[in-house]
Amino acid sequence: MRRNPLLMALKGIAILVVLAWSLIPIAMIMVSSFKTDRDIFAVPPRLAFQPTWTNYVALWERWGDFFHGLLNSLIVTAGATIVAVLASAVAGYAYSRFRHKVLAGSAFFLIFIRLIPPIVITLPLFPAVNWLGLNDTHFILIILYATFFVSLGTLVMRTFIDQIPKEVDEAAHLDGASRLQVLYKLILPLSAQGMVAVAVFVIVYAWNEFLFAFIFTTTRAKTAPLVLSEMIGAVEGVEWGVLFAASTVQLLPVLIFVVLAQKHLVAGLTAGSTKG
Image 1 (cartoon, rainbow, N blue to C red):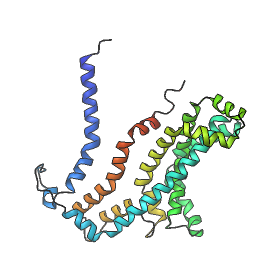
Image 2: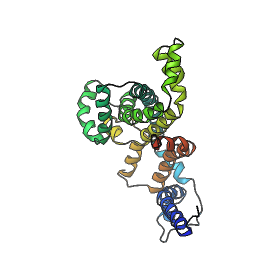
Image 3: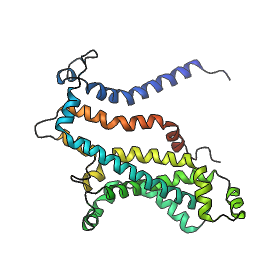
Image 4: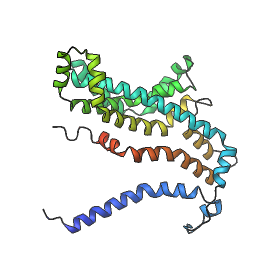
């Protein structure tokens, strides 16, 4: 079929607009991190300038909390990802292979809980978390992040597991395999792409999450996004160059990760779209 040149051109323009809308702010932050304050606020903006590492040196010398926050973000993100992926895989298997009224009702609950603003759940939890002595710990953030994302992860894993024929389970059972062995030796390896897709979502979410960390941490488990907010509210004024340097350091790991894992990210976003 012959393609309409005008339609193709419009699609190309639309893609360029979306890319510019998404990438220009990120590029401005990264480029500004290598500028002096004078160059950052120059009017009109200076495209040609002498790059400097001054902002990164100042970040290292004056904001040690930021690198401690990065380590906390790494610990919390890794923990939440492991917990969320395992829980989602097991729950997805149950939803895919079993049929019961209770499961059908709880599936609706999984969708409903994603519609509730996190703040509605967070504030009532604070007294209980405080009473348990879990405030300002990595553990509470790992549990909260994993819990908040298990609902979506379960639906994604169910879609991937649905694509595995049930005859695979039946053949394994005939060979004497238990339900648990079928899950760990067959289903999980065959749905590995779904687990990676869920992991990508959790990593991006947990690395950038702010609200839960703001309410449930103070010093020991404070994550990098919280330190960035403190930079904005500094009493002596905002050092924009240092702030842009910190934003770049915080952004780069997850940006590189998303680029490398984009295939799995798209697979997770489109999970179920081709299912009949």
